[in-house]
Image (tube, rainbow, N blue to C red; front, side, top):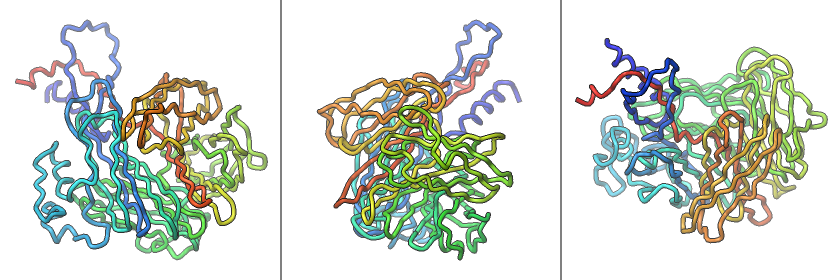
Length: 529
């Protein structure tokens, strides 16, 4: 095997680790070799995949999907983004076997066979066979596109974006439920498929109905294990191992069917044995509303949970260390004036393999805040989330803030509204400058950009610079000035209804619009012959 082939394999291996695929460009053969290794180039991805879970089983549900791709320099021309229904996981939907081999010959909603010949490759063709698109985004990046559905029979959605629509493609799913368990505002950012997820903050208690939604984007079945960890360690589960998720389908798993033990706080661990899935937990409370619990950042010694609403009336921290080693964590709140330690909750001790919950009360005390967890001594990887309550008495509403990944190069938030969106940005270690861009609205308007300085150890609720002419929903992008300074962010949506302070919070990790492409010293032009 020659050196050119080896270089190509190395590049392809690196690219396979991300959702999208970047363009490989041959280096300039006339460039001088000064003996210093060239840093990996960052290029826009060419394809992205996102999965949206089944929005609700309530007949009173009203769901809005918002698709947005930022304008990205160097992105490919052409392409589109679309969301199509999964083939299972909803009432009155045929199993894949009813339509053909492994679900590959499903009929569209009009009864005609979808060939999927138009589009970009095998993955897009597979999605095309699941029915007509719920949302199509073809005009241009930089402007949101929305779609609305209603009722309790709406399916999970499978999505792909290609060409100039792929870099940073983000979809927000927001559902309003007027009454019943989980009433209020439920929001989730549609996720890329992966093979492992941690969900601290789920529950098997009476009064809570939690579903683990598993969505398989691929043409072969995925096999998934669901592990549940309570206050005394792993819970015995009856049917949590070897769950099969059929091709191009979604499977909601009721958490209480996996174990007989009722516990207020548990951590759910989703592990994919074969294939890949998107995963999210829908937590529905009989009296406190409900929301989506997104996956925590990967286990780490230090974590940041950004953007706890300033008017939070109760905050409950849930932490797990996945291994058998105990963890001792310092608990701090990054407030607008700096890091402070909550009185009476300076530290938390987490026993290995056991879920620990701590009530922090109204820890923000009327100011913007983010929780910062750091080791008191040795660093032990942990996962974490908080459940947040707003309101009082019968008018309380709940939402979740999981530990977040860094904003990175750029984070994107879709589905924002003019009067109900709050952007929280945290710089836990060093001062940071961030550029915040408001997109054009889904119904018109012009974009706008402002730069803000976030002091070290603080959280700032940013007054979003929405121009007067922006109509409909808009998107936000957050771009730190320096790659070396950790920055975390979240967006809170609010929609008060009859005295209930309905809200939902989504963290803003890197939107994965760019991929690092290893430099190669080989001339790849021979492959073009």
